[in-house]
Length: 220
Image (cartoon, rainbow, N blue to C red; front, side):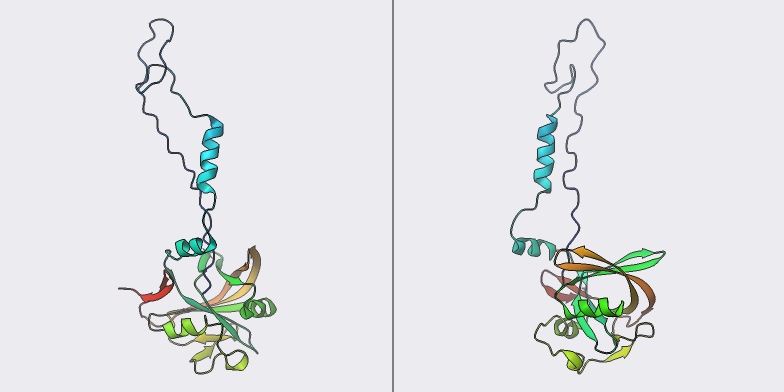
């Protein structure tokens, strides 16, 4: 299952708040220091210590297995990415998202080792079928590294050709999106594929298929 990586967020937010009240009228020289109630100038944590605390909070910890477990707690929809007109390839992907409506852009993260990765780069286009709750078998099929390849990859799967890319789209899906490849960005062991939407259409008005904590589920 392609899980993608969730962008890091700024976890070193400021936590300190001013708790002292404004000092009273000056009656001579200021002799008070901040000890709880404000009787002088509030004390501040040394800048170096504050920066170190923020850096520690943002530093990745744990193993890759722990990170996978943490990222798996973010529920997503499930799609099947397809590419290649003459020798179609497919892959289950949940690292898919919309980027912009004007212009219409989407992105999907694909492992560089995936066969569909080479197909997208060669063709310069791809399509996405958004799976419905009853399509777990398709999600599992196209996530299985032992599935048939080549002309047999779509054996027994109900598909039709997309009008804009001429690649297989999965029948019964919630929606279909066809894209021209606009840019490829480095994403570690994945590529981040940016697609300009050529066409889209709603499909089956069913509940979505979800992926959460390593398993598939429908909405309650």
